[in-house]
Every structure is written in structure tokens, then in C-alpha cells.
Amino acid sequence: MTAASSPHSCVSAEDIEFYQANGYLRLPQETHGLFDDLEKLQGWVAEISQWGLETGKWRHYYETTNGKHLLWGTEKLIEYHAPMRDLIAGEAPLALLKTLTGKDMVVFKDEIAWKLPGGKGAVAHLDRPAYSMFAPEFIEIMIAVDAHTVENGCLEFVPGSHKEAVPISADGRIASAWLEGKEFIPMVLEPGDILIFNESMAHRLEPNKTDQRRAAVIGTYHFDLSQPDLRCKFYAHRLIHSPPENARVETVRAQT
Image (cartoon, rainbow, N blue to C red; front, side, top):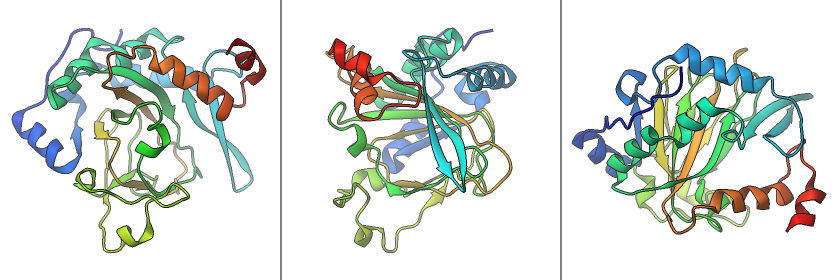
């Protein structure tokens, strides 16, 4: 089985209105139709979790917390896993996003966020500053592989924050004065659900305080069709400036 192979538009007028007002949209598996078997998706993720530290291919990132060295993220997947390529970069997700936004788009970043037991959280931030030098506007689809709960560190959003000029401090975080009085809403997801949001959503994550993983597949998409190779440029830059443990930075420098 592969990911759903035909474009599937499941987005209603009410969904579009909700997304425009709140900056995010949740869709259950039976509605979005991006894949037709949750166990197969979980099997793909299990395969990728066993990938080794070969250089020049996929990229494993780790975090250290409480003395443990934990897999944090695996990026640049789609060259090495055909079903994941269809799921992230196939016609179905692009058709869904076009219905929601009215825009054509191109894959910019692809990854699995693992959030293992004990995995760290993240303070309130926007995703835009991290990638704005490449793509000032983008949208993300996060596919819940496991249940996302308050206890295991699900995303928490400030609805409507994408419409505000959220101030960013010198350290890249959201300025503390803006956060005063803001309510963060937990994005609780069942396995197979998806969460769509844009680059300007204020969000945070708590640590995973459970003994179970909270994995998600994430595709990030930009709207500048004149730059179809932006993903390659981004990953070449990232390999030098934020290398994973299985990187040979010298090779990339020699080629650039």
C-alpha cells in the first residue's frame, strides 16, 4: 500500500473560514484521506526509526536531556522512502492545501519529529524566523503517528495569533510582554489526525512526561513556484550551519 494516490479535497467552506480566522485546522484520518491505513503509516515510521547513521542521506538530529541522548528528528526523508514521498509530496497533500489556501506550493522541508519519552519541550515561538531567509511564507501539515496529548507534549496554539504582528526578541523567542494574558490551546490529536498551520502561529510545547513516544510526520511547503529547488538549497545550508550527527560537512563545503 502507498499513501493515497489521487488528489482528495476534503476541505469545506467552514474549514476554510475556520483556518483563516484561527490559523490552524485539525482533520481526522477519515476526513483528510491522505493515507488509507494507519498501521501502514506507523510501519513506515518504524522502518525509518531503524535507519542508521550513514552519511550523505537522511539526517538524524538528537537532543540530550536528563543524561539521555534521544533521537529528536529525522529530516530529508523523501529521497529514501517512496511511500513517505507520496504522503508528503504527492498530489493528495498538495490538492488539500490548495483547496484550503487557494495557492499552489512546493515541498520545502520534510521530517519526523520523534518526541521520545523525556523529550524536551519548546518555549513560545513562531516558526517563521527560523526559515524566513529561505521562505518568508509557508504552511505545515503535521500527521499524528501516535496520540498527541497534554501529557506527552502536544502543540499548543494561540488561535488567531497569525493575524498579529507578534514581536520577536533578540534571542528569537516571542517577546514576554506579548505573552501576558495569552491563552494557549492544546492541539490534542488521535493517531492519524492531521494539523495544518502556517508560519506565523504562536505555539509552544511541553516536555514528554510519559513513557510513550509522541511521533509526527511533518511536511512544510512554500508558495514560490519560481524556486522549485529551494528545498535543496535549504538542506545544503542546513548541513553546514546545523549539521546532524551523521553529516560530513567538509564534503558539502567542497561542493559549494
